[in-house]
Length: 307
Image 1 (cartoon, rainbow, N blue to C red):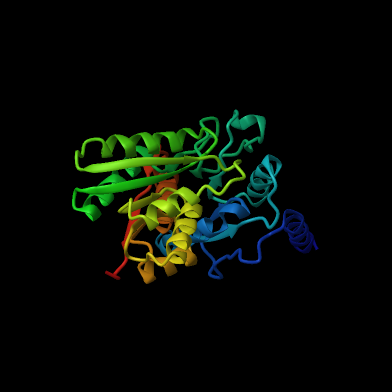
Image 2: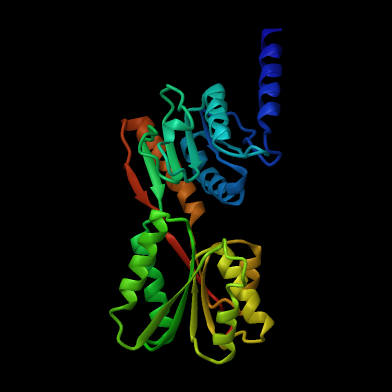
């Protein structure tokens, strides 16, 4: 009766939190239980993290569970994530945290447990993580610049699409690194096209004119949304292959444009490798009591085979 009662409580708890239908637990009994969790906004990213973690879990005799709540509407549900983790009490957790401008502890309380935690996404200094795996935005900017210069063979006109990110320090670091890298090439003309997402006017009309008049050789997009919109624009005016696009992000829509040759190169964070690295660092900590505090995520580059 006690076991049945515990199982019923677990079921109710999961139902209240909105346990995702895609959450999975390996069937084979293992010595360790690792929990991957985050918001529904990051679901595709988390699934890839889970796949990477699961691919190496057998080496550590561990089961990996993915938990993504169906409903996620603010900071209060961050607390729900940690409450769920505290209830499950896994041997380790991999948590994707959202960007919060203010002090993290104003929005959620991390359970006072000994569960080692690897964090992804936004870095929060007040969260007691054993390691953080994130993007080196300075290196990402230099990487995009190198790929752009190589595509143009050192000479050409580049337009960088700069979406307003509400003063995000990470985005500022990326833009500074990118523009500084381009400034060292005398035969590269790099123009930053800024626009505000709150502006009701069409921010792409000027870019459309530039493409039609042949005033740009390469468009550089720094977000998934911009990469999709610019690819749609180039396709609509029948300029596939006549202007290069270096985009950033992942997903089926971007993959389609890459296969067609609309997108010349597609950069993305290697999320499956992040999952593998997170598992390795968790068990390094479990075994030895320490792990690398900060790990830079690798950038994956895919190039279209259409010439």
